[in-house]
Image (cartoon, rainbow, N blue to C red; front, side, top):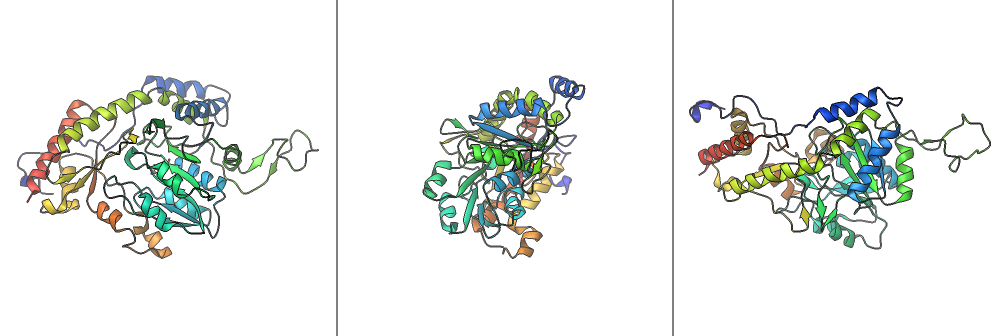
Length: 396
Ligand SMILES: *Cc1c(COP(=O)(O)O)cnc(C)c1O
């Protein structure tokens, strides 16, 4: 991008990332303490973190995993997803939401989005349900809750399992209830860009005891020592059985200790995110050249991403040039997401471009701008100034 185009230098001296973790001394102390303890993995901290997460979201059980993708894999296993099954998800998501079906030998099926709220569209899901549908994995994109009641209504009387991918939505409420206890299983991720972090990490929350037991087994090789579960109960104290094919997907005590400490800060994080989002909404809500997604009444959103949709009919350029112009201003922008089935791997599997036209239209027009709790007022102002400057410049 020609900086001279705009005159002067970039609005910021140094790049502002689009997302960043917030770690303070209490987090450091918590991790330090666990490093000096007897357990580095599979100990009391993971259990404590699970209890706290379950209580926070209002679910009976929580099972931690080494990362969110592993957690989705576990959820598909617990749901009994397998060869010949179809799993419906949105194309506007991180690849894991669909890959987890492939991990189990099933086929991801993409349902198009709602063009106003950008989430998977309940009507589009309906079109894609077949006798082979085993699970639906809706994603709370940017943190906004999907219409889970609408999806539940669709599948009433079937044994289709709903696995909510809430990687963006820890703390989001749907009709006054926290996301996490509403679907059959719900996944949260603790990757550093997400609402709270454990470095890498993830969790499944559920109210279903059978899923809970399967998840616990799956994340540890499907090996059990539980006397109730053993097929041969007459062995010694050393005895254990591997009863199915599982993985080593356990969360370490180091991760869990960080998670507990981060969870204490969650409300503060969410409030700060809301504050920034309010400023952005005020600045961009009526800016010609931009379109914001619709905030559905049913979602009180713990905002993870702030996505600008360019109104390309009103601009004399495309997303790439605006993206580059913002980078030239040192605003760390990003794009969430490339439609999953556009990736070469999915193309090789036979998915065709054009499958979900609304998702593709959205992809061509979106840019994610910085949003994280440690942003200063100046950071927020810099983003607003840069976006304004560039939209004005490129407006028809
Ligand atoms: C981050 C993310 C995941 C995967 O989580 P990891 O912890 O990075 O494995 C899955 N789905 C969505 C929508 C995500 O944003």
